[in-house]
Image 1 (cartoon, one colour):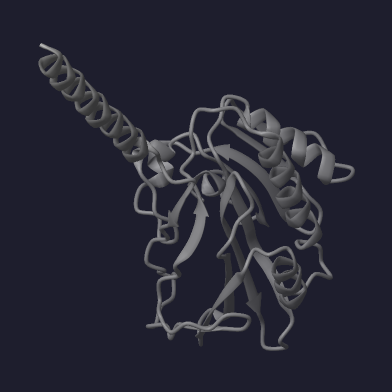
Image 2 (cartoon, rainbow, N blue to C red):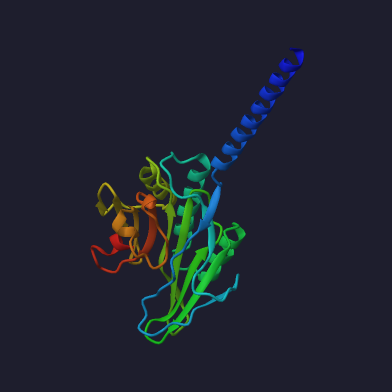
Length: 252
């Protein structure tokens, strides 16, 4: 009888151990990574002639698609303190490097010093001139898809045509972006346009500043960024030259 009791206890111990191992394995398999590779759509520029794409300093890689890293996809969670700090830093970056005296080299040096790993794509075309596109390989928490376009004329004087970044979707993200813009753009005038999902300010030097909550139509067939349905609600903040098209800024 004692032997039978010992056998029964041994069986119960084995069953308990197998159950514990199974629970641990299930918990480990349910964990999601803290980050995932950022996917950027194939780079297609609006030029009349086939372009020759090359990457140059500070990082060089011979391919037309830029592979960079980003944070996890936008979620419904509120913005954290770190993400709000990132928003403030990137908004200030837009202000500082869209000024008339700002140059491409200044932006690259700043992004490199901030650990964002800038990458540059150069495009030369007889019809459009020289254009440099800047992306980042290590965006700040809560942000992604930094994008800057610089054009150079025959005199080799470059100017910013567009500069923007995206902020993860969150309940208060649109309002947080507006507060960051107001804090980091001195003497900002009243908005020239405002809807529930779009705010625009007219800046000096023919520039506009805008914030937009991206809809599904904004994400479709984007030539620069890769999106999924879960990215609806992402916030984009941008400064660009006014192109005198009332709908143009809605399509960026």
